[in-house]
Structures are given as structure tokens and as C-alpha cells.
Image 1 (tube, helix red, strand yellow):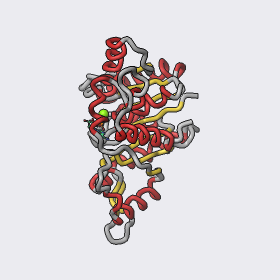
Image 2 (cartoon, rainbow, N blue to C red; image 1 turned 135 degrees about the vertical axis):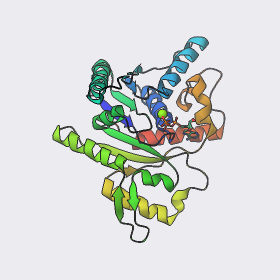
Image 3 (cartoon, protein in one colour; image 1 turned 180 degrees about the vertical axis):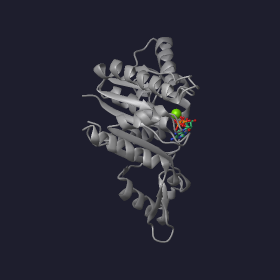
Image 4 (cartoon, rainbow, N blue to C red; image 1 turned 180 degrees about the horizontal axis):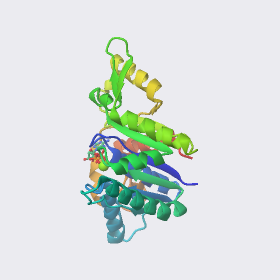
Length: 265
Ligand SMILES: Nc1ncnc2c1ncn2[C@@H]1O[C@H](COP(=O)(O)OP(=O)(O)OP(=O)(O)O)[C@@H](O)[C@H]1O
Ligand SMILES: [Mg+2]
């Protein structure tokens, strides 16, 4: 049985692809076989990361664990929405058929926006990971909460979509989805210390049934390694590299901790 992990939310630039890359490499380093589907056919961040990784391994004549990956194209049909949707569904189905037999874990990276691909992927999620920027504003991405009573007054389109995905899974007798919301780029002045944020989060968590896990801090190293296709989990294994700085060790630990907290096994 392949465990499918989907990285999604409707807002762009919150860290879906960055987190996805780190989870992929951590799972590979734990000895798992991993398949990746990059559904962001415009930016192709994960694809570019994996291409950089391959080039680094070849250029330095070293072995780096790699996933099997596919990047299905978005339909170019503009004349009939139903046909475009059917084409994308077939593309995704083909990717699943190719990767599932060879993967313990399947990681799907969604584009930041409401797309048909993203909708299909959410229904496939055994685990859904939604990174948010560590700010009060981003909580609106899930729903609105009354400032006085902390009652949830309105769910976002995205939360409704996750709800529909859960209903679909239940009707199809698939295991329930485990939804993890995680703040990314957590700074020194962590806004979670704010009591109001705690109140809002707690109301949303109860209503939407997600787990809240501390995510990655704001660190330059997460951006820097992209061009070489490496992660902190690789550095210690590469001759001449290594983890020399305390901050890098701390970063590797926070990635490992988050992957543990996803409870994927
Ligand atoms: N923890 C972090 N620390 C520092 N920079 C980060 C961190 N997480 C992500 N970034 C940077 O933020 C930018 C957006 O991240 P990323 O591309 O992963 O987001 P995304 O949600 O996949 O975006 P999109 O919705 O456009 O696909 C990138 O430049 C990335 O390097
Ligand atoms: Mg992305």
C-alpha cells in the first residue's frame, strides 16, 4: 500500500514545494522508495529541484537517493472545461498507475491556487500538509473566526474543498485523511505567542479537524540549497560538505521532527 502525502493550499508561496522536497529526501534517506508528482506545471519547483539534484550527483560523481517523478501537463484546452478536466484526470491517473507500484510513499505537490489538479489531488491524500505563513492573516485561508467569541463564522473555499475531499474518501471507503496545518518560516518573534492567534487556531482546529504542528523556521539555508538540489539531510553524507554550523544541525533536526510528526508509517 502506497501512502500518499499531498502538499496543498490555495495561497501561493507558503512553502509547499520547499516542504515537499525536504519530506521526499528525508523519506528516501530513511530507506523508503518514493514517487513524486509535480502538479505545478507552471513553476515546476519540485521538478527543477530534482533536475538540479541529478545534475549535482552527476557533476560530483556521487550517489544521491532520488525518487521516481512525473510532472503531468495541465490541459491546454480552453474550449470545453469538461474535456480539459477529463484530460487532466486521465493524466493524473496515468501518473498514479506508473508510480504507485514502485513507491512506498507518493508525494504530490500542488500549485498555489484553485485548479482541477489540486482538487483531484486532495481527494487522494492519506496525509494532507498545508503550510501557512506564520501570520494571523494566513489563518483566513482556513476560515473566519469571530473576534469576540472565537466562534467560526465562515469556512474558506479551501476548507470547503478539503471537506468535500474527506466526504469523497469516506464514500469511496478510503481511509480518513490526516490533515496537518503547519506554520512555515517561523520567525524569532513567533506570532503564535499571541493569545488571539491561539484562540482562533484552536477554534479552527476543532471545527476543521486538523492537527497543528510546528514547521520550519525562516532560514536562508532552505533557499540556498535549492540550486544544487540538496537538502540538509544530504549534506552530512557528501564528502567535503558536512554540517558544520550549529544552525544547520538545528535545521536538519526541525525537518526530521516535522517528518516524524506527520506520522506517515
Ligand atoms: N522555511 C523557509 N525559510 C526561508 N525561505 C523559505 C522557507 N520556506 C520557503 N522559503 C522560500 O519561500 C519561497 C516560496 O516557497 P515555496 O516555493 O516552497 O512555496 P510554494 O507554496 O510552493 O509556492 P507556490 O504556491 O508558488 O508553488 C521560496 O523562495 C522558498 O525558497
Ligand atoms: Mg510550489
